[in-house]
Length: 148
Image 1 (cartoon, rainbow, N blue to C red):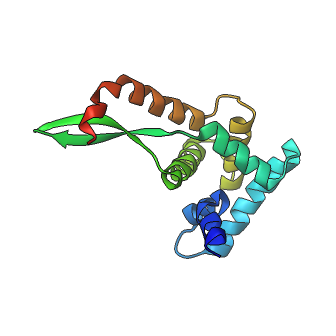
Image 2: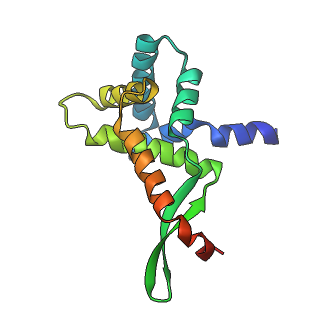
Image 3: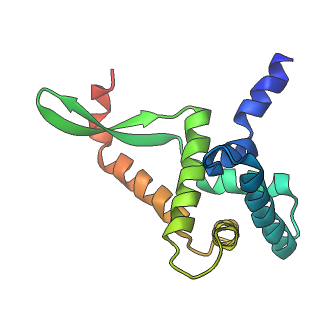
């Protein structure tokens, strides 16, 4: 039973659903998310599980740069990430990229378009956020000794 509860906590779909819920309206968020994933699965021919797995592989990062104040200075320091934080960042980058899309289409179409761009390696904004994070970590890797 403990094992199944861990799987539910780490499920990317439920985290995505929780990210979309506004004012407690879970049914509306579930419809939006299901519609977006059905569009993607129709265009790619993959199941929901394989789409989520590919998203996780393409946007997964292991290190994040955080700003910390040390001796009246602000330093950017790379930190290793837990699995929950990594899944949160994946969803955050996807949603941020979908919201920044200025086309006059529905949010489900924006989310599905962004997921398609990530899966097909066509230069999505979510991947750019990941690359930006990695670039910031690499440029500040000399500050890792401040972590401890």
